[in-house]
Image 1: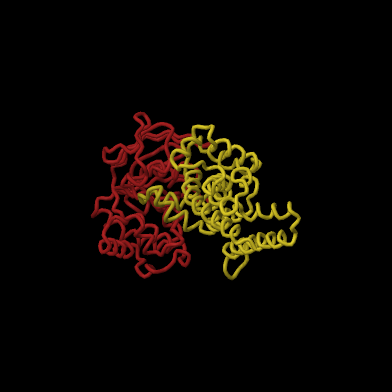
Image 2: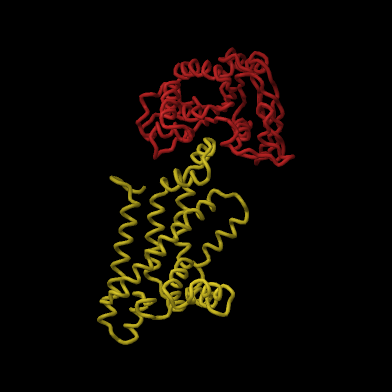
Length: 234
Length: 222
């Protein structure tokens, strides 16, 4: 369960959100500049709000009122951004192992193998990130983020470099794995089809505020009507 | 050839470079990764030797490390001798004087590392120390080379601070620059030429090392 009430002013954007995500899979949908990525960065602890609080399973991660701020590496949150940000001087295998350095060598090695197999990138283990395509790099970034076995997974348009078929296949493998381990997921997208394609809970973010919440059919009813109107008028 | 002055100069430059890299790597990382406002003041203080005339810095250190100050008396009590007019004193002066030549390239190199990589490491639980050791230093190794060579060269060519703080004691504080000054003062231009060529050669070799290291293999820098 992810609870948050946050206020952050950044340039022209005033992000003011309050909600509680309980669904296993939540999609934050909204146009570019609505504050989706900023919201995810706040949840991950990469940024601090001017005011507000975040709690994951009742554990306070951020609370400006009580000067609580748990650092990004100690929140049990995995984060995958649109930009894979793989460490260019390390192999794919070393990238995936980076966050699990405290495990013993054999456990670390089997975890790396498991993660790479999960994202369909086992054959890339010895490659350099410089030799990967955009889609391959995104798969490896996902494997690296999942390796430490977190409680919450934040995905910021992480499959933008994958074609629809590859993205669907990856999600089909990923979702049961996350379900089995009780990992809650929040996915950010500006593509309405991503929100409709899943049976997720949807939060519609517009100009820094959550303006609708519920199943895709409810939260995105207006968006659906807008797209249908555009298709029928053309 | 005054081998004593040459070995003293190389010893001073090597020691100064080693000490400065040990100081400059964490300092540059702090300046790049830190967000506190007082870090701007720290950065300004670090750059101060760039604009301060060397003789002024040498004079200030001479006074500070001399027997009239608390610091000077404390050092004398610990070491058994004052730092001024000793090789150890030259090392201290050189470290302070060459500080910006070690810190600035490293700050530039560390700041060029993509913030997204640092964010990724933080999300994976890496401590600041691990981020420096596993990301900043390997990704900015050319800046590390530049910092090492510039510090070494700057120390080799140092004159004002050395003369003020160390004087001209053969085997203890007489470096190649001081030797060159002595040779010119005594109209021994043949010896002065040899010393100048040696200093010039050291500079060219060291700079060539930097540019060989900085230039990407098999392509231009553009």
